[in-house]
Image (cartoon, rainbow, N blue to C red; front, side, top):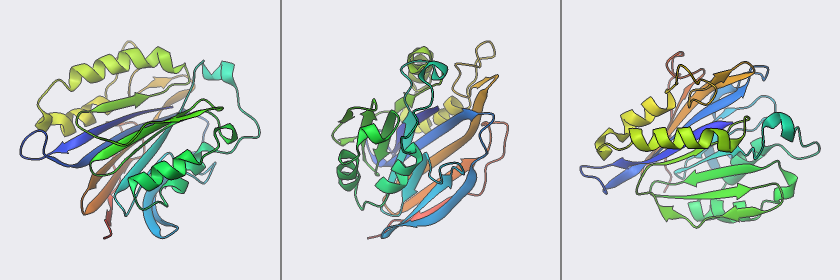
Length: 252
């Protein structure tokens, strides 16, 4: 369960992109162990920064020193209680570290094309470099991928154990309303969006909370031509302090 947004970092004028910024709220069961703080680890010839899920040993978001960020959302076509656990499948937490061993966004796409969807529960993957992005979606049987395209406007992706369709409408409407501002304000608006909560509907809010689950962290990643910066808050946005950001220099 997550809400992810992806925005271009504007230069002196809209359309002059300096990079991209991804933000990700992670929503999890109250019973799941807390994630380990972000760390830098080797992935093949690359170095990457990512928080670690202690259950799978993998992650849901990370970025490497080639200037690539990737995140993964679960897909729920029905409420989680109806879907149940898919026994015998590999953890989705393996996917992001595997893909971040690539040197380019096109290389990430090629690696994603080789994933066998039946080996994992359904997922949605979003990956980007400093100017382009692509999406991959699996229903557990078929994998569909888009071609990399230039990021020119804010994008949002979301899921929920209540059923993705139940939260997509209100969160998409809110996203459109909040980002109807000049591009110079998008970074601040992105942070406001990921901290947003409807007092009368916390269960469908971006910063969500219900009896069995809540937003447990928010991660932001900035990808620029020469630098990657990951900031991590180990708790609901607005209620917990961010840890010191980790940075990687982008290799030649």
